[in-house]
Length: 565
Image (cartoon, rainbow, N blue to C red; front, side, top):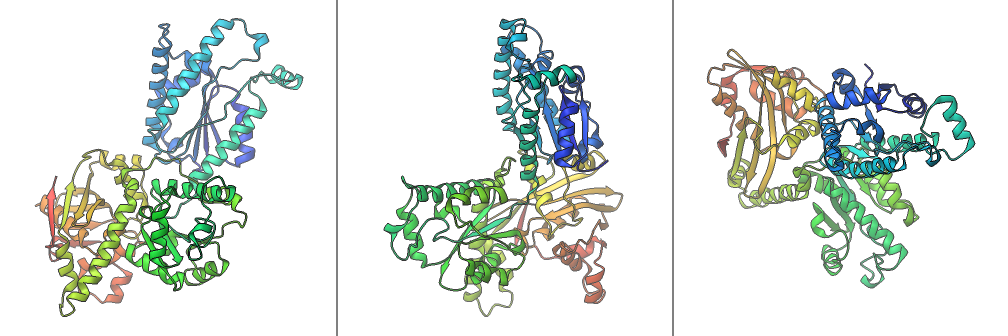
């Protein structure tokens, strides 16, 4: 089964829609409903082909009001009828998400399909159906706000005949849908799946002067144009609102500016009406040194790779300097025309249609805490210069607590899945698994374990997880991941030893390790378990994938307090 196919669940003119999709997307189109009866059966019973849905790249659901009305209980109450249909939609969406949690689902509004007013037999019944569809669409829009990566289209398949040519097409094909409405729907669907496929950066470095506002603050605050009744100022204002929206879905922002920090701080404090304030930025490096040096410092403090970041600056010289130092960092050039900037960036860095997790919403705070830890370590090192083990002593000063869970307490499934799908460095298998894949492992005897970490600086949230399988005296790790933001605190060592404590019959640990070249952090962890048995060069080529529990017990983690939940 091709993994780029598009599934169409449509009760009207499905052949025509499929042809337009194929010609525009150059993808396979799988038709799952070609009549109101088949669509009704599919929606009510959710008999979905697992392989088809697990491998598709997009789904279109387009049903007419006449079809969904057949699924109601016919009590005469529109309120009850819409709720009944809504329940079927929710059941279908839930089933799709279990099979493919990341696939974009595109739903067109439910509309009344009629040729035109001059062929309607029962005007009163038609208006009742219009009322039914309007109420259903309102409830449907509220429903999809609780699901990830689902869009209720602004387009719909309409059937009004406005010309002799359209009427002729209907008489020849019996298709009640206009080509114009199909074209609009397909174009919107293309834009939707494009947004879903774009990989957004974890962190965006942003210049200030003539990037976030018009003018240079070191010259004069009064000459700055931002907001107000000024087209240029409002263009910058809306660009800031766009960046603010990116931050709410978990994209980190950091200031990199050639300015005095005190001046930057003063300008933000004197302009509270701006969409962005200093608290929206995870870091602010305002100095007169090279911007690449500022970026390097932030990357080190936050433990983020340059290839996971982007840089926005209006100056071609600054962009060139940063690009030379960090060739894998995504350097973006704002259009010179300020009125084009918002549209330009919204295309290359589109706002995601997925819902932000609680972890996304507090990501800036989490990384601010990371920066505080880095500064605290620096201060600690300067204070205890004579200490032979000052890094471990610093770890002890953090007061790390590790709360370990073995089931879905407080329903953290979104974050648990997120850590599996965002982690590359400390990822044993290197895979990004779906909800259905995780469920399949658990259904086949595996157990999901995960942990939340806190210290004196704050709560890091869920940072580590493993999917394990107990086979007699062997503990098999099917998946094992840890967030890069806690690498170096020995969280993985404490986590592993807690699992050994939980399973006293275990004598051997087995890791299904897959070297991806990106997961070197996990390979380093495996080297620790191997100790000094073989040469370091051999360990680099062949990290251990099986060891006795004694190897894990020598790992150092006594600075961490473990709490089993």
